[in-house]
Image 1 (cartoon, rainbow, N blue to C red):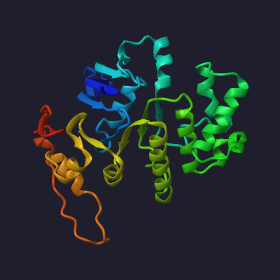
Image 2 (cartoon, helix red, strand yellow):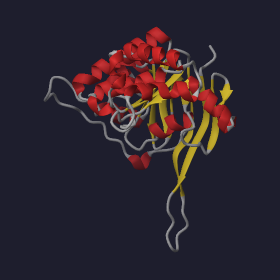
Image 3 (tube, rainbow, N blue to C red):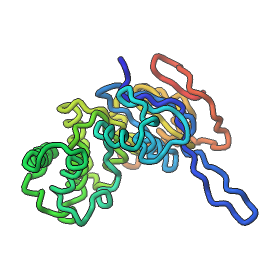
Image 4 (tube, rainbow, N blue to C red):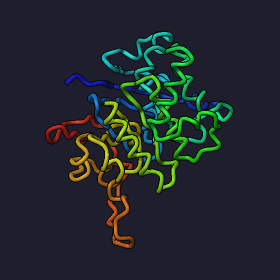
Length: 292
């Protein structure tokens, strides 16, 4: 099967500030990352804070410009697109941001927020756009009459639903979910996750699910990639990665997952950061890759 997303050798470097007698040195946030996502797949990208997960997702959509590497979405070379071509192509790939409180313009009504992508891409007349907004709000579990309200009148979970409605307005093939539930109360997280799964099934969506909640990733993702210091250290089917982790960092990460019942003994697996080596991924079992 031809992958929907094909990323090869992705690199992103940021240049820090130099001093009076010190030259600014580049920091490699994403280091030679390669992976592919099949149509309709939920692909999880996990790792600790600062591992490069979000940077990878934003490079994928060229929200920040990659330093090197190849990115193909729907067999289209994303890095080669001009500004105008990229704008047109973005209807096929969208993002839902982590913070539902800062990702929505507080001065715009909900209807205008959801309609904005349709206006930018010149889709339909005013009446058709309004009908589309109403159907999108219903799709994510909100009342169409909510279109006249402002974001501050909604809860965090409802705001994330608005973000999903905006992302789906252009009928994208790929949606990057950047920690979509980490800012929400635990009681609301399950509702939003169920919505994401339902939308994936109904609309045939492909997700890049960026998260640090390993238990959630294990439940919902088809395949999982583990990042450390900007590199992929392990990748494969979710059950294989979680039940038979091959890389020392993956084992250490999984040992930090809280256990039930509360108070039960957790045997933490230490990871010596000084021992980390930048090794290429190699296939250890069918479809299961690790940098060992």
